[in-house]
Length: 165
Image 1 (cartoon, helix red, strand yellow):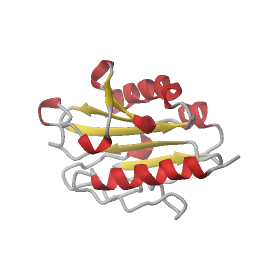
Image 2 (tube, helix red, strand yellow):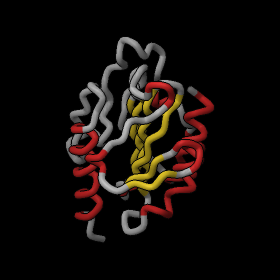
Image 3 (cartoon, rainbow, N blue to C red):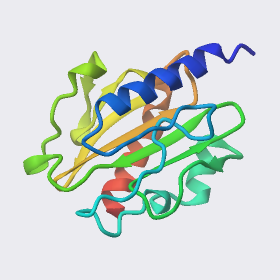
């Protein structure tokens, strides 16, 4: 299986996420020991956010099968990945990043589609939504050739995040 498209998509996502970050450094690059949402210290105004505890092992296994966590506990970002480079990534933004519960547009992400529940879908399985006044970014990739197949999982995981934050 040619992994070039998957690795390229992950690299482009990492670069885009870094360029579009809300002041939180995300230096990770796939293949260099960290994913596109590499663990960063929790912002001072976001005490208690531990993105790695937002999903249960059973929920992650349902989407990824056997997987490993790539983030460290106690941070506002986390990523889980399996041996096929399928992944779930989450980034919980600082307070005030979604003023009034509205996620600012991210024109650098390109084309988008508005979904139910305040979700905005971008290419590559990347989704944004607000929880209170925080922007949350979620990416689930299990089928690079058809990212729409991941939407049910994205919708389910976004609902879990909203419920648990």
